[in-house]
Length: 173
Image (cartoon, rainbow, N blue to C red; front, side):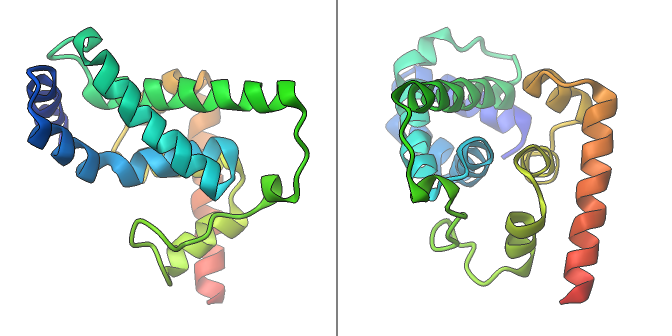
């Protein structure tokens, strides 16, 4: 779904169109999930937070300004949902082996993907976020820098390092 389609879809959701909300969910859930996973690095937490994002979208759709960058609006909701959860976890000081778990490729049709395995095994959290936002969602590096509160040069550098890591990993087989 391109920017314009996403904008129109959110406008329809604002009018109460549940089929538009279903389309929004189906077309964006993989990217939102991957983005959130980059923050929390826990499969089950990312699943829960992804659902929370869509509940927040539905509850706050009246705050969406038609004609603005719909992807950025969705990612801002996802970002702050993930960051709030991380703060909550830190406050609770919950230590568990599950916190270090890697993303299990059993959902969102990513099973047996060598690219997925490479992304998960060789990239750190920021590199994963940047690659997913650029490749999967088509954000420009400047947009990613703004959303992640990083310098443009840092985003470009991390993206290039990540791509080189992925190329090396995929060539190794």
